[in-house]
Image 1 (tube, rainbow, N blue to C red):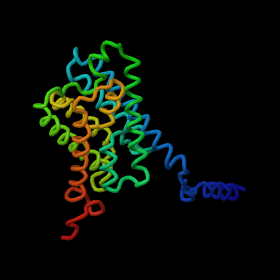
Image 2: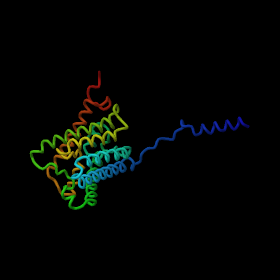
Image 3: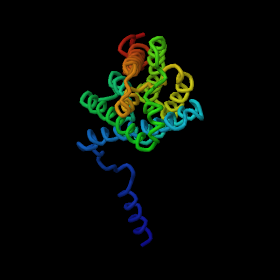
Image 4: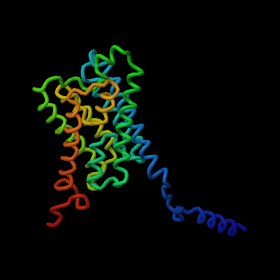
Length: 260
């Protein structure tokens, strides 16, 4: 009898053996298309909302430290939470660079960009609803009132290109390039954002993200030198993608110099 029970137990163990795996789940239409777009919209919305509030209500008292920490920690949290849903782009230059490096399907590029811009507008509207009218008007909706003269345009444009290139490189090498992928990428991107805002906030406002500039500009109707915050970040993102595709990427990503 004992032998029979042992045999039955062994048989039962075999029935639930980890070697017998259920067929892999295939994402449905909602999980492939709508859920990622919703994640991009919500992620960008909350990022812009938190970022605008930190600038509108606190910059005069705390300088750049508090906005820098708020933006960096918000990025780290949202990337960590939504990376498996949409890839946690929340930034048009990131989306373009990731697509050019083979990390996004073509049919998702335009929906991602549209959701990011809409999220930026919604986030800025939330910030306006939360903050006082006087503070919001004085800060132009946190729409980067740092840039006020033609003499400062060249430095601000270069700052946006260089700083966006750096943070996009962190994203591409940390999340897309197979050889250098790291589970620490949310922390790395968040820290990079903090460092860049502390370093360049006084030069350009350290936008690095057209959606972050577009939302407050729409809500506050403030468009002074707004083009800088599109041309600079997009050029920086494309520069990072070019560096990865030509020089820094592994053999599956790099387009040239694959042979010894």
